[in-house]
Amino acid sequence: MQALRYWDYYGMTERFTDFYERSKKREKFSDLYDTITSRENILLAYRTMKSNKGSKTPGTDGKTISDIEKMTDDELVVAIQTTLQSYRPKKVRRKLIEKDNGKLRPLGIPCILDRIIQQCFRQVFEPIAEAQFYNHSYGFRPFRSTHHAMARVQFLVNHSQLHFVVDIDVQGFFDNVNHTLLIKQLWNMGIQDKRVLACIAKMLKAEIDGEGIPARGVPQGGLLSPILSNVVLNDLDQWIADQWEFFPLTQPLKTRSGELYAKRRTTLKEGYIVRYADDFKILCRDWKTAQRWYHAVRKFLKERLKLDISPEKSQIVNLRKRESEFLGFTIRANKKGKKRVAHTGIKTGKRQKIVAEAKKRIQILRSSPTAQNAILFNSFVLGIHNYFSRATHVNIAFSRLAYDLRAFMYNRLKMVGKYEHPANPPPTYKKFYSLGFRTFKVAGVYLYPLANVKTVNVMSFSQELTPYTEAGRARISQKLRPDIKQQIHSLLKSNIPNRSVEYMDNRISRYSMKLGKCEITGMYLFAADVHCHHYIPVHLGGSDKFSNLRILHRDVHVLIHCTLKETIDVLISRLGPTDSMVIKINLYRKQCGLEPI
Image (cartoon, rainbow, N blue to C red; front, side):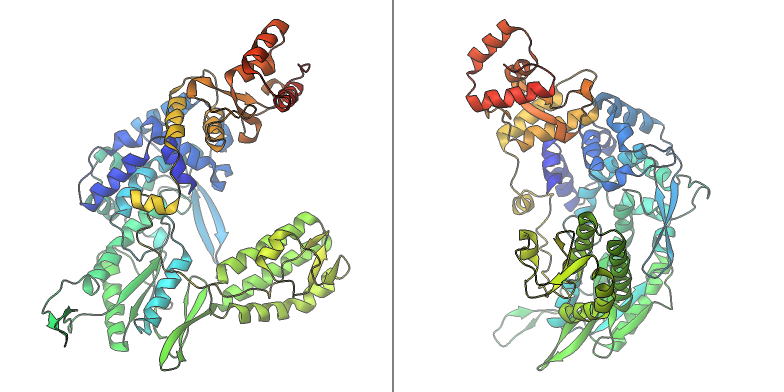
């Protein structure tokens, strides 16, 4: 995970781990403001933010990450620290996007500086919250996905034989979060720094352009909103788990072998919640228990969280007789021998959207049969295959989709491509698809066949997989080499006047990617010897982008720019470059408009 490397760059890994461990012990945090506004945390937030696609989306001030990149790192740090001293978020831009059901979802897009500030808060909040979140909530959490939520549901159906599902639809959850209650929930979680909570309260009350100051809700589109929404619903998760799953052992009974087992809970409601954001299910063993859960959850949401449910969309489903829908999939408990197992498919609304989107992209290919459009079509097909390949009947579903689209696709692409079995397709095609399916070749690109997809077994999430423990990080990825990490810390402390925050950040990335080695000589570089060269000079139109920077030994850098023969001779004598090194140096000099050495 790239984020782990970022943490190492800025020396935040140990601090986040400490927050996580202290939160596990239910310690209180009354001094978070200094960490949130620290130079390292702010620069980490910038680095994380700039790799986010949303960073190029302007807020009400019209600015994007490109405007921030022009600042120096000192200017950015001071700007955020100064802004937070008397914080007043700028107006939030409203944007409406279409949901799967055809309705519009309102997004709130903060200004770019406010988004970086939110990222600063999120980085500090997340380890504290992750230590206390329920194991089986999967939305907006590190390394968790919709597929893990589906795996949990299938496990409960297959192994625990829980075939009754309580489907609860919270009415406009993100628009109806109670602000006062949310601040209390953060306090109860241990976030008890009043300066921090005051800033959160102001973020929640940020004025929405054209609508005014919201009385409730968390704006979808803000970087802090996902973790705040999980904080709200974590109370529900824990309350449901405490009713059965975490209920303390009482009246231990003995088996024939004399071993203790289970607990007698005849008056309790057996049930297990699986949640992804505000979409959740409670799986039960019988109809009566499901009814009790339905009414209990409705009451809890209303009285404790000040949220209403949608009676039309909330229901109890017997999976032996009907399908239930979850995260774009359908679930049903069908017979297999003497047991019932979960069979999953694609819900009707999703199938219709896939067909509509496929037709749209086919039309684009017909009117503009370019390689780029063919690649975009393949990206769409690969994306839906990757998502729905966890369905147990995905092959049947996509075979039907392909059959429904066959005539439409053939009639529109027969004039712009060839319909054939792939002959020597590129490695990517061979990696994902068999050669037994005929498909169109448009502009030299074979289109991925819709029908060619197989079920991939869903894997349950391993609870040890967390970036906030040493054991969890070891399972995720290799740590940054200690020697490189030490040099990066030294580079971060260096002060280069008038350099943009983009340059300083990409300089670190380039050094790390090259494992601390000069890109011409290959020698390992200590921080004192590191120079960062613009391959295309700034005065000739070069930028501070990662792709335009090169990590070089300082003597090599001087040699590239040097015009005095005496100095060149001294540097060549000192470096002793090989012929291949001289060729590279001359290539760099050529980009600078200088004569070869």
